[in-house]
Image 1 (cartoon, one colour):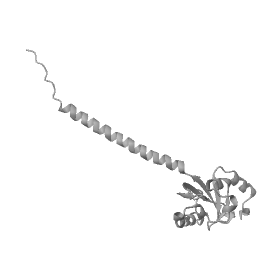
Image 2 (cartoon, rainbow, N blue to C red):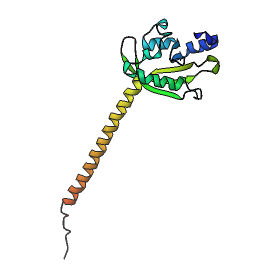
Image 3 (tube, rainbow, N blue to C red):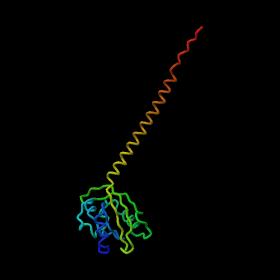
Image 4 (cartoon, helix red, strand yellow):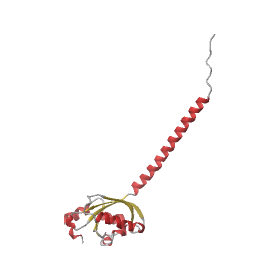
Amino acid sequence: MFDRLSASDRSALSAAPDALLIIDTFGTIWYGNRHVCALFGYAPDQIIGESMEVLFPERFRSSQVGCRNAFTGNSHMQPGDARIELFGLRHDGTEFPLHIVVSPLEEATGGLSVAILRDSTLCKRVEDELIVARGAVEAMRDLADRMRHSTRRLLMSVSPIPARTTS
């Protein structure tokens, strides 16, 4: 199936630093580089010819079909237009957050698309930590405001010492 791509195209895909899949309009996997195998835990021959839905948890598969149809069936799509955040499913059954960017290949490939997949576990962890940190900063701001108002009220409640008058 992968023979529709030139040797130089196959070489470039193999050397890419990211996990790459070549899929057709039906979502059939034609090619997965070594990073796909490392990311999902499959041997290369285990995923070739399979539906790309095997790489997603069951609860996302019906929605993923809609996403796949959107990015593989749209000839007017510009490269990188389809960006998807969902969960991947490893061969051992573990799930992980996944970022996917899909672009159509040239017309000569007959409707093939390339999908770049990245494990976004670290990004999600950092996002969660930022949310917690923002909450802590907001709580500290609120505390500082309350302390400022309390101090102001305390200072205003203290009677001023009358000035001495000299006769």
